[in-house]
Length: 157
Image 1: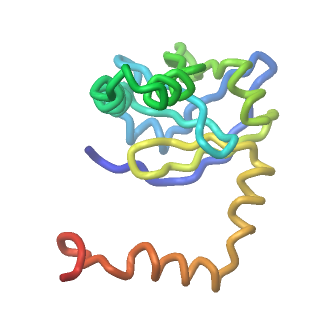
Image 2: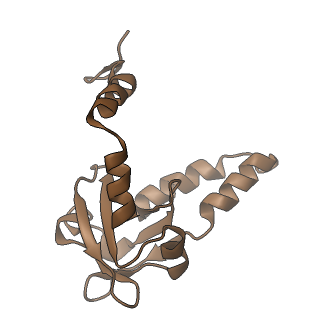
């Protein structure tokens, strides 16, 4: 798996369609054949997955014990709103209105690549999210999250 990189500002047209930016499309060689899947994120945003990545998540979910209430509730909530996206001949995808409302996305949005997925944010909310963490806080967070890793292979011993 190649990890996705980049941050792209986009606009939705009146019908809720978004052109997939060329720089992002180059990183998704199978997108026109396999499509994408969009779903609710955990922070009032949306998340777009490649079909291959979505299938990995489904495989994990299928291993959960469906006799446990918390597992059923999680799967139900996580799957709620998941929608297949196919590019049209103009390279656009139609984002579902219900998901756009959930994430409070207007006509201006940001696609933020996050390893193997693409986060979709309202431009205003994304800017707020990025500004909320000061440089000092970010430095401290980096130390907490990454400080115990040997970048060559895993956790330091």
